[in-house]
Every structure is written in structure tokens, then in C-alpha cells.
Length: 182
Image (cartoon, rainbow, N blue to C red; front, side, top):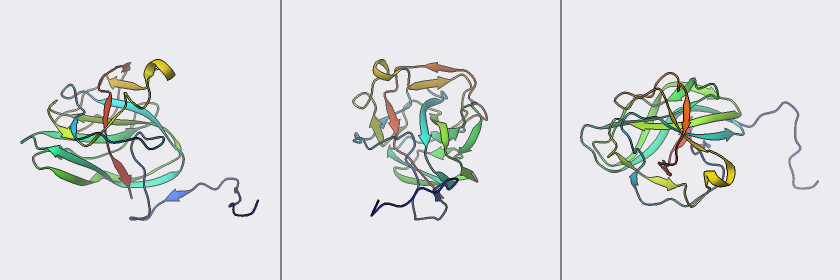
């Protein structure tokens, strides 16, 4: 077919160069951002949303935005495989200042195409980030449970090594806007 690239068996699209792409945590297709606000309804609780990454990406940085400063508070963002094992995460990110946080991950990893858990947590429920409103996007009652909390807690904004048992939750219906890049 003219104008189309051929599919090559065994070839996977790869994002491996800084400035040449990445992916937004938890997103399947674009949705409208709401204003900044709360995305952590409970301190040290890890919240998870299932997502599918359709391409390979080297992840060495996760970007987010603090909209309202919370002195002395920390949050963390990461990905887990479907077994609940940590794949990549940020160190604790300070919410003492507002603005975009371009945060290097604790290790640079190659994330292969697969389903993942996009997860976030904070050591205080008052930390506010730029966020997406999931309630206007898709409802669990329409497609089954999509938002979960993990049994294993975070500590001072550092995500745990494993998630433990996941339990379906209805709040937060908001998730932080994030961007994962090489």
C-alpha cells in the first residue's frame, strides 16, 4: 500500500535517544488535563493504573509537575511489571518547590513492550501535581476495575520493590501527568 511503512516481523519500535520521544504514564489516548491538585488521597499508599506500552523505550527520566508546594513532602512515580515487581522508579521527589520536575530514575532501564502498572505515591496526602481526571475519561463500571491500591506501602516518597496484593479502589479518580523519557 503506497504511503505505508511495511511491517517487519520481529522488529520493535524503540525510543532510545533523549529528545526523540517517550511515553505518558497510564495513557492510552489523549485526554484533557485538569488544573493541578490532589492525586494522593492517602499518605504512603501506592496507587496503580494498568497500561500497555506498545514499543520499547529506554527510561532514564520521569517528568512531573508540582502545582502547589508542600514543604518537606515527597512523592514518587514508577512502573511495575504485571507480577508487581519494580521495573523503574524515581527517587523521592521533593514538593517543596513548584514547577516541572525532570527527575532521573534510580537506574536507566530498557522497558520492553508489555502491560505494566503505572504507580504513584506520596508521604502526605496534600501533595498537588498537574493531573488528569479519569472520571470523565472512563469508568470502572464500564470496563471493569482499572484503578488499584497496593498492599505494600511507600516510604517518604520512595516506592516499594514489590506491590503486594492489589485492591480495587474508586478514588483517586485523578492521576498525575507524567512523561517517561530516555
